[in-house]
Picture 1 (cartoon, helix red, strand yellow):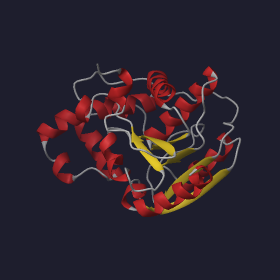
Picture 2 (cartoon, rainbow, N blue to C red):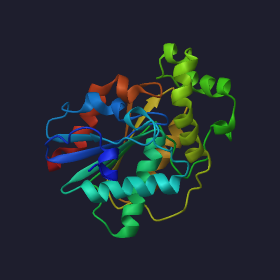
Picture 3 (spheres, rainbow, N blue to C red):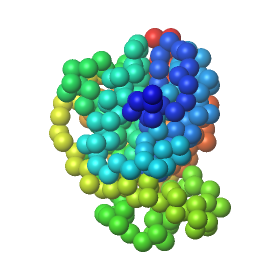
Length: 248
C-alpha cells in the first residue's frame, strides 16, 4: 500500500551515510533533483514530490505554508532513520526552513544541516508583487520567463501550461500568504547558496539568513541567475559535500 510518505518520495531511496532531502522550487517537482542522485559520494539524495505535479498531478495542491511545512515535517520524521540534511531551493528553501522549525516544535530528530538557495531570508519582505497567484496567465508566464529555468517551448504551449499553472499558482499562494513567525534561530549549521543577478534573491536579502542560524553560518556564491545551483551543479555539490564531510 502506498503511504503519504511514499507519495512524497517517488524515487528509490539510495544508500548513503547521510540522506539529503531536497525540496523543489515553486511549480517544480522531484525530477529537478534527480540528476543529483548518485552525484555526491556518501550522500543519499532524496527529492521530495509535492502534490499537483509530475506523478502527483492529480493530487490537490497545497495552498498554505502551514500545511506544506507540516506534511514535509511528517515525511522527514517518518522516513529519516539515520543522519540527514535538508536542502531547499527558492520556495523550497522557505518550506524546508519552516518544516525544520516544525520538527523542532515536536522535539523530533533534527537534521545535521540546512541548505537553502534562491530565496530571501524569511524575515525579509519579498520583492515579488503581491497576489501573483491571482494574476492572469500572461502575467504568471511573464514572471516565469523573468526567473528563467522554464523551457520556452513549454511557456508557448497552452496545453502544457494548463497542466502546470495550477501547481505554480498554488505554490505562489503558499509564498504570498506566508507570514513569518518570529522564533529563536535554528541550533544547527546553515549554508546559503547565492547567485549573482538572481531576480528572486538579492545579496542583502540572502545574507540576512544569518539571523536564522544558531550554529555555523556559511554563504557561498554559485554562478549567475535564479537556477544557477542546478546549472552549476558540480560547484553546488562541492559545497554540499564540504559541509557534510564530517558525517560521511
